Image (cartoon, rainbow, N blue to C red):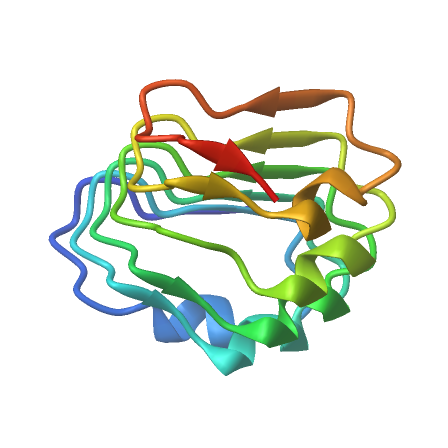
Length: 128
């Protein structure tokens, strides 16, 4: 596990990029704006938590997190997720509370393992 909460981080931590066998990463309450391509180098991740950051984008290589069960991204600036998120076949919990979503994209609805989708307090106008 790697917990770097409230550290003032502006980028996804190098430590998380080096240790590819991590199962749990929590970098909440920081200033991270993007989830980089290197996130795809962590196929053993089960839980990824980035609440209360400044996230505006998630790289499409998130699809390589084949064991990811929990993706916790509330209180950010996200307007969308990459289409490749639909490839997360073990994802059970997706928390997108308090972001900037206007549309709930169909690729989110295609995650068949999803049992808990939290998307309140966005600006949702439609489901596409």
